[in-house]
Length: 156
Image (cartoon, rainbow, N blue to C red):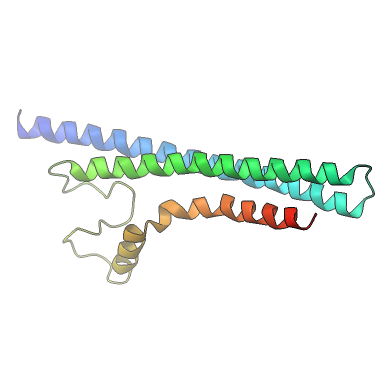
């Protein structure tokens, strides 16, 4: 295999992996949007049940609580699977040989790179990379909603 064939193959692999990461990232975005819409409707219904006198209001509230808890857990699990996929793709790309000249696969600056970059952003990128903040931040939103529903459940 010539050097040009290897470079072309590596470029194809980069495009494939990068497209897959973009796809998983948009799935996370869609799932978070669904979560926010569903939770907004559920909190509205719960709030109205407190203001209005509805027959069997406790049963209605418990139903809303279970739907809120269930959707929070479901979205958390689906976002977790997307985050795991992205991290696996990143690990796959890092194992490739001769990836110099390609941008870092998940964006930002490669923390292991020797290249000079922005002196201010490089430490921030390293912190984000090693703490995985960009990947795990979307997981906190369903957890926050789950905690809110549990707190409301204790108030019934």
